[in-house]
Amino acid sequence: MASTFTNLIIVLIAITALSQIWLSRRHIGFVSQHRKKVPVPFKDIIKINDHQKAADYTVDKSKLNILGLAVEAIFLYFITIGGGIEWINQYLAQYSFSEITLGAMLIIAVMVISSIVEMPMGLYKTFVIDEKYGFNRMTFGIFISDLIKQSILGLIIGLPVLYFSLWIIGNLGDLWWLWLWVFISAFNFIMLAVYPLFIAPLFNKFEPMKNKTLANQIEKLLNKCGFESSGLFVMNGSLRSNHGNAYFTGFGKSKRIVFFDTLLEKLSGKEIEAVLAHELGHFHHNHVKKRIILMFMVSFIGLYILGLLKESAWFYEGLGVSTMTDANALLLFLLVSPLFVFFIRPVMAYYSRLNEFEADEYACKFAKAQDLKQSLVKLYRDNASTLTPDPLHSSFYDSHPPALLRIQAIDRL
Image (cartoon, rainbow, N blue to C red; front, side):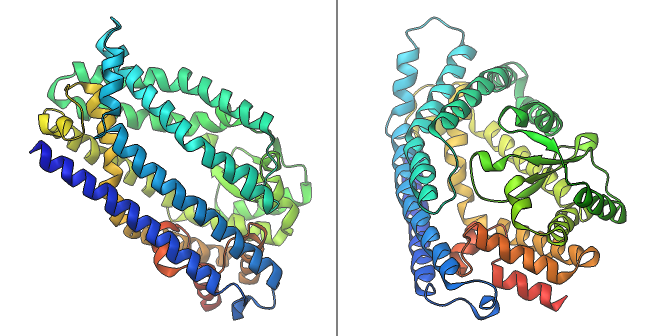
């Protein structure tokens, strides 16, 4: 059984990696093929130079992604079947710590190694590719500062959560997986409320919107939509990137509407209202609540499956680990479970796209369709998002509909 499972994992690693690389190569070819001509619906709005910049930016990111996919597959093989986790376990065994402490040290060690493996590509993307296309505003000092803050937060928040999770697995009987699900769900709810108030300000400045005219326009829109928030805030997104964005954060009374300063620089007041109306559409249709419920359902099923696998020796042996411990079970499951869900990604992306169409439809009831179209086109242009993604690649990776389909849907409204 163990050898069969080993062969299955090897096949899945290969198929998943090769499929993702093939999709990326398709994407590169499709974008390059349509590089020379702006799509007809955008020809009066998007200049050829902007269109070609978006195409080149997409191609460069996709080429780096291909390298990242290969590295990721090789890392997954060597950390599991190749004996990486087994070696770390043997090294830690010389220390006379408790089982929970040793398990936490194992999981942290693998996470640190994974971060180190991924870091060069993240640095290259930020300081070479984004720099080349004028998007990067991050300095190496800010990068180091972020890394230190993230590490400290990981220790302060993540370590206790990890310890308590391992304690639940080892001490709450056969239904440990159910109690772990309750704990993780409660923790995620708490983080939704805590993150905008205490964690996000560690990395960015959030100031109340100073443009009173725009703030009044937005407040009127919120009143028409029956939406309450704890305030309108502007975030210094320009500290790290030239990309523009806006988002809702928080839960309950801690809900905030956050605008990147870069977004406010690029869009008119009416266009900003249209973008906000789209986001309000997600709340009107309860997309956020539905996604939270879906996330909890997926974690429930995942932990139930882990509960079945935890006592199966073949699960450990098939992944190159000789000892059946709580930490090994949790770590192995987290590492290999993405292999089993890759091919249902188009279903998840399709559901997400339906949400986007519904939010656009809602936005057109409270803002002009032309303003929404104009804002979307500007965001595609200013963020160098390609107007011509490969349809198959897009169906796997894009949570938002391609620009052309989205604009056509707005025109039909």
